[in-house]
Length: 457
Image 1 (tube, helix red, strand yellow):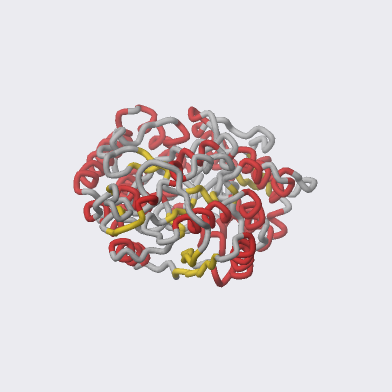
Image 2 (cartoon, one colour):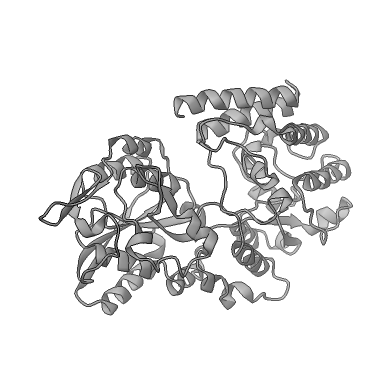
């Protein structure tokens, strides 16, 4: 699926080494030079003060694996920018996004050859900001925040070498969460489709009803807890990591053990296919066959069902993911656009980054039929494309539901490394199999997570 390609999480381990290698930012000498990371740059690129200078010159713009599916769109954006700013030229580089992407990005930054405008995720932005390779767009353009939903602008802040949070990115596009369910299976199980649960445990209670009614003929959801950790904990207001991110604290909350007890109970009672406990498969296939009551929480899943299983789509409805203790919907950190502090034409780069992420261009891309993504600007979320629902069509309902959520959504999701997440998941799986108690699983999960966090994993 093309949309899945857009939301892949880039491996961050190699890029984190950049934080130790960078030299931060420093003021310039009398010849107008300064340093960003280990690179000599124009002193206007760093320090305080608004960025000034002519919007003229050639820059490079780097995306990740977008040219094949969205070449016409981005070629059009580039052409529009160049027309609006005579004397500019944007060279588009489309990185394949393979498993060496992060290593190559690190090498480019250290060699002072990183693209002028680059698409980054949160881990990469964190490392590049700390090392001093990204322009502080919040300082260089005090009006940069205006188009964006406040919570998404807040996520665009990352700590520099001194620990001060600065805005080195512009929010670009994001996803969302919702409940997708088979109305017929819920009604058959005594669950009212019109009454979406407001808590995670309330949702689990509905799962239990389905398990008892289905008697193995169909299921409520998939078993692998990797789909729910740490998302459920965040929604429940369970603190997963200490404030400094260096230790796990989820075992300190008794609701964590209750959550594991629920998962073990549901698995034992048949709410989940037994062979899905360690499977990485999402609900797509079984839901499309009418064998799972709840589908993926990703809005693009609704379109997948519409395209691949019309009969099940006719029975599909969408609802609000339980707000629980968080009180609002949860939205992960978006993808970002950054400007290199090493850019030789920073005024051009900043102007293009802001043009690319403005409401008009965000809305236009989100309307592309080949992608299910959501914008981060307030004006875009109010566009009729998101707000006008076509009858009872689940996909248009999903689009409006998520767009409305994103205006107030929390973007403070816990980010766990794959190693730490897998360590926690493994202990929960043992509890679900009845091989250890929920309390022991939680205790052991925290201990193993802390061991990995101390190692920097």
